[in-house]
Length: 172
Image (cartoon, rainbow, N blue to C red; front, side):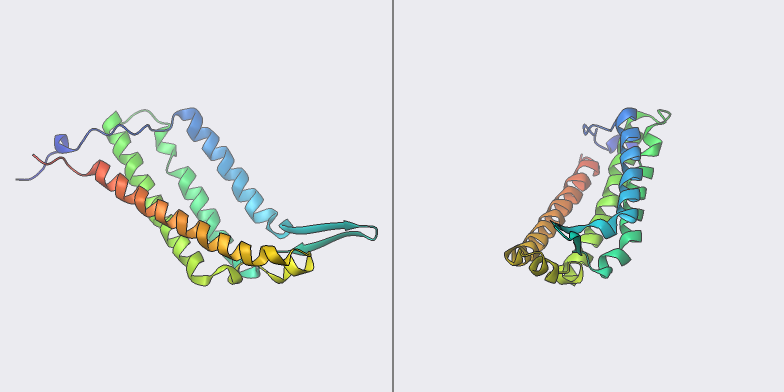
């Protein structure tokens, strides 16, 4: 027959406490500020007798995605706000937390697929590595970018599957 609320399994995953949520909000605000104000300072700095030579490593394409990254960070922080209010019962809070985290993981998977599909050349100026005299890092950097994103994508899919299994109703 139809399932009832009591058929939902007990979730043992730990919900972040108020202090962790508040710290997360503070770090999210700092991350958004740094990401949006200092993105142009990411690169190589060569100091020589004539002064400092700066070589940027991020392509303009990554800067066009800043609003997407900022929204993801902000949404990730905002969905935790209801956890500060201790009004709902623990089971409700657990399900809210699991479902909100699943939504964020789906968002992350979309971002990782977008970044992987464009390839590292869309986001990094690999000529900057040559200019900085570390040409051998350019090839390694591209492989590291792809490998790291593939790993993060895999972990996100695994997290989504694990969270889905945790919230599914118990079989009788």
